[in-house]
Image 1: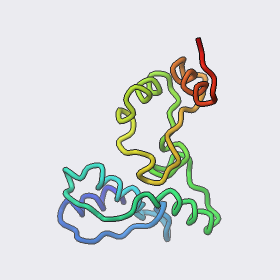
Image 2: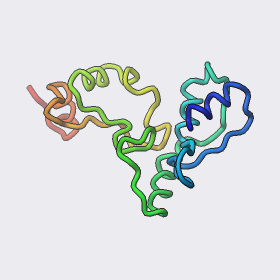
Image 3: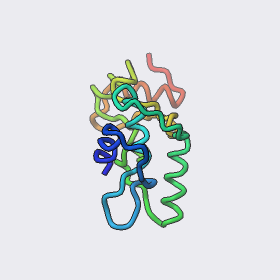
Length: 140
């Protein structure tokens, strides 16, 4: 639904329909947060400025999910718990060196608290050092 909506915009659609979290009757509803952020991050391609206040997406996503008694899937693009989470060693190292390598948008742009490094068996020493420093420890 998101891809179809984006192509409609590219082909000249002046208005699109979407829902928060893609929730709606049955299936196939375009998640408006995904549409808006795709248009914003690829403004050079689409040539569109929606004027939508994207910093409200995270909060609105949670509000809608809570009101409907639903959970936002952790792997949901833009607003899922893992949307800005990094865990694998080389991935974390690259993220710590140059954030935009792995994030085409800032989490703050959608009201997401912040990116995070998640410790797993595959995190690696750079990720471990980063997390320990976040907790106030300094390694020597």
